[in-house]
Length: 129
Image (cartoon, rainbow, N blue to C red; front, side, top):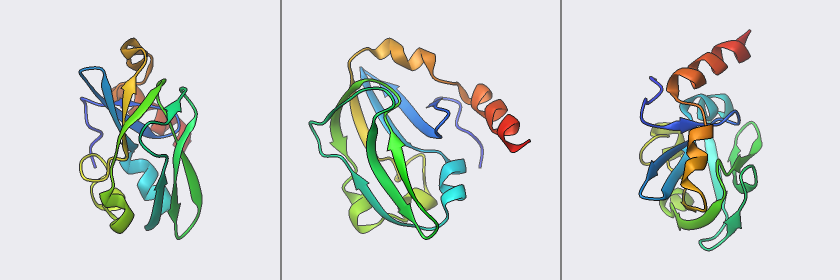
């Protein structure tokens, strides 16, 4: 799967899509592929304040349980409730239907410190070596 150009990326394999001071967050195609079949997604509730790098929930697969981290400081403004019944959406469509939370960013300029698609692709290539 191609790495979408319009998104921002972290070294922990989260992606973020910024719009109007909000950041929609999920895990990358690479991350869902590494985890395998996702069987459960547990996200922090709406209204939770988080700092960059804080967990915002966990993803459980047949292989492991992994934390999902906040790419920026903010407050969880929205949670993708459809993942409760259909955690497999993260595997099937990580960049659209499989999004996890929307953060109301404390400082929208923080997204500028995240990787763009090219930097993330280079990061993945370096990690693979």
